[in-house]
Length: 179
Ligand code: SF4
Ligand code: SF4
Image 1 (cartoon, rainbow, N blue to C red):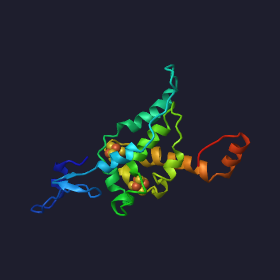
Image 2 (image 1 turned 180 degrees about the vertical axis):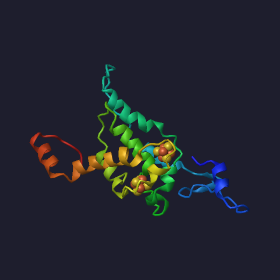
Image 3 (image 1 turned 135 degrees about the horizontal axis):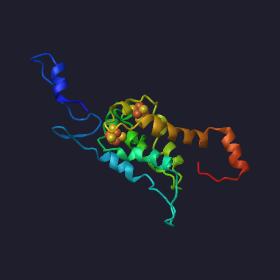
Image 4 (image 1 turned 90 degrees about the horizontal axis):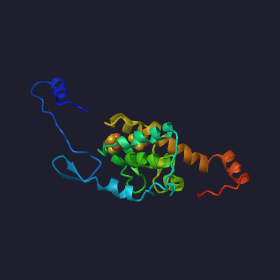
């Protein structure tokens, strides 16, 4: 999102301008880094499990809510900026903001019936995100990663694991959910 002409205008004459590759990923060459970790994580996310019949109907607002997430261009700047990965290198414990957007896109799909909440908590480590919003600030697609995706997923985890009233209600209504 940064124009070189702006950088040149702000840089004192004679001072070099440095352009570096993303820091969070293994360096391959020049500005190229190996971002395959993101795709490996994506493959572990359960796909949308929709109805088999084709008479789909849902509210336009529900469609708009997930359409926003599909604007991701997979630049991975959000992942590169996230301190959980960039500084603490928790690649085994945390799925990163791009894949949390993917999880939100699937979880909030109006026709999806898959339950990914236990994986969001344990395997994808959403609790490591402390909502700094750094990822949202750098997203060139303007996706509100923290507010629209991550916080929504965190609320689902809280409802499932930490809300006693929800737990009582599930017991009364005999809802079987995974933990
Ligand atoms: S809001 Fe969460 S995912 Fe985004 S940069 Fe901060 S810690 Fe990382
Ligand atoms: S910064 Fe935005 S566009 Fe880039 S990978 Fe992250 S969510 Fe997608």
